[in-house]
Image (tube, rainbow over all chains, first blue to last red; front, top):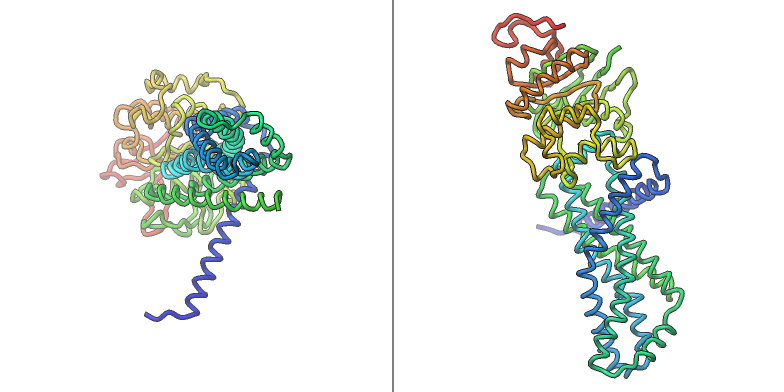
Length: 262
Length: 236
């Protein structure tokens, strides 16, 4: 079997076009959902509100059992390690930089991807395979309207809330754990954190929460809708959705950090 | 006025089945059409009437209005007016049977009221589903899920009723109950298109035959010879 340069560039071009098409499809899908949010159709608002509350309960409240211990472990780990490296100097600043700016949003997003995003893809995929989407259409309702905007609002709000909880637990819970085994004074620690926190950190947290929420929701539902008629498509779609979400969140994270801090 | 009119219509096959090509079809009030065709083609035709299949070519008119298949959202108001009872229909699995039945009311009337409209409540009593309304589809039998789907479709007060093998779909006991309602629907003039292997049922209700074979569709009056040389039936 010979391998020519033509074939190589042909495959490269084909894959690039395919990926670009996928990205454009995602953008179009995101625009459609955001368009529905902006237009706020008058029909079905109560039903949508009910679904938003259910989604927030599933993504935020039920995820607390995972987020709180993870935040505590990460916070403790960081404070212990950097207390030794920096000999307590700049400890608060390092904690803010690592927890608030980077780890907080990313680990929160990771928990949401693992727990909720995959579930949304599976749910949507099953709805497709079991003809539930067609059944919604039979009632005269646009399935995109009752599936996507509530999940976008629910997941995005949940990420923002979890992100705040993660930061608080990681910093103060971590400090509480460390305080038992070291002699870091609370006053100094708090003072350093207060000095290290800027307005930009607040905006970055909100921006990351919103963009992560949009990226995760759009990628997961898109993959769910892309399931055809076979149940065996669902695990494939779920796996792809999880990888897509992680990748998009990492890219968004770098982009926002670069915009605000470089 | 013709309720549904398909002109120069072609449909691509479902999976590896057969398509239907370049046919004309119309459906008016009082028509009760029996589809004489293989399962997959019959299902394809019913799905096409329910606007689930985008045609390869041709025009679909509903009450004289040409339907635009370029965007599924344009078809939603039409789907709402068609009762489609087939093996394809399902309930939303993470909602109770009651929520499923109330979906249309909840959405269009913007209410979270859990009170069924009178006609649906009557159908629930008729099909003995009242006690199971608070359960989710996975918690009830397949028969009950299908009853709920039938009630949801009938509750729409459809202008056209499409049925795919109703006796097989519903089971014997429910079908007996359904037949009483169907008789009223037919007597009310609502057009019905159905596929069935059930001779007695076809004989009892059909007044037109849609014969689909070799990719061609023919519409004929229901005649002697369709089922074991029995005499034709005159309706209404």
